Image 1 (tube, one colour):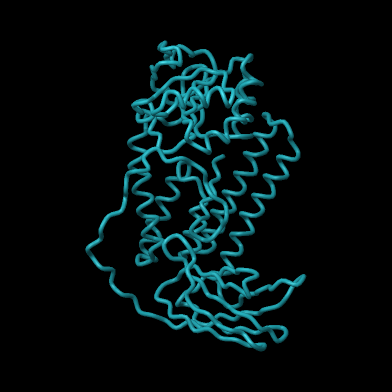
Image 2 (tube, rainbow, N blue to C red; image 1 turned 180 degrees about the vertical axis):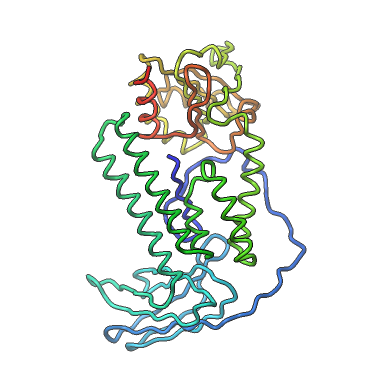
Amino acid sequence: MNFRWNLLWIGATMLISACQNNASESTTQNNETEKEALPTTLITLSGQSQKPEKGRLILKKFEEGQFMPLDTLVLNGKSFKLEVPVSEADFYLLDVFGQAEFPLVLNPAQPLVRLELSSQAGKPNLQVKDSKDTQHYEDLQLIINEFGQKLKDLEAKYPEPGAAMQEEYQQIQEKSVADIKKLIEAIGPSIVALRAASVLDPETEFEYLEALSQKMKKKLPNSRYTQQLEQKVQVLAEQRQATAHLAVGKPAPEINLLDPNGQNINLSSLQGKLVLIDFWASWCVPCRRENPNVVKVYDRYKNQGFEIYGVSLDRNREAWLKAIAEDQLTWLHVFDGSSQAAQTYAVQAIPATFLIGKDGKILAKNLRGAALEAKIAEVLAKG
């Protein structure tokens, strides 16, 4: 799927599962230039509860990949107030009585934020007033939640993936991407706009992200989120240049490796078939979890001109062979112990897949589950 859910840095619970191929490499660099201190604004969180309440309110701030406690208030009555020193707009959570957490986006440009606390079905509910950024964030969450619900409805509608499901999925995806971009333009320069941009697929939306980065550098040059987007765009540009030979429509680079019997199997020998190159390893938990889905797809389409070329990144040959037997992987397998093929295909994490057309050209990358099966069905239906 091309609609990525990069939600970690605002506290979502969805994780992207992958085994890193170069886990030992560190990208940490020492920055000897200290960032110039920004002026601080005292933001007042003025709260009112519908009825007298007793409990603890904990304000958390997003720092280094997680929300860290910043301040605590013991509520005993109907009204409460927190004063928060803020130097730049950032993401926060308010933990209410340890029962629920509510997002806040605090911005020095909005120094007074009103909170209305109530209860629904015995659980606390919080309404945030006078915070445009928080409202924009809630609008973003509505789009994301709507997208997720539509995907669930689509899976229920099509128990068996196919071309019809792929077409409808494409429509849902395109609308969601359009809604995200429309919201970004409506928000204007804001860390919430940057947050919304993080949901977009960086591969297909590179030009859009590059233009947004330039715009945000002019409007919010000191924001760490602007700087993160700038760094991300720079890395993406370098990756695009290094992997131009792997773009959709390009001929798939040759792979020539040994199978379990010690025989050479060339990828090019499969030309004329629809081929899935599957980079995996016995030690990769996400790979092993995905294998049943791949087995199902292979069993369904192997007699219709579909083949799988499994490339193992194992170091231990016996572990590789054992995993093939345990997972009942009956397609073609080769052993890439030196990672030569993985380097050619710029594989940074596994599982990684490349769908190769009958003409030997790359059709799609990193399809999984229902999306993989739907694409295969679509291609084979066209003959």
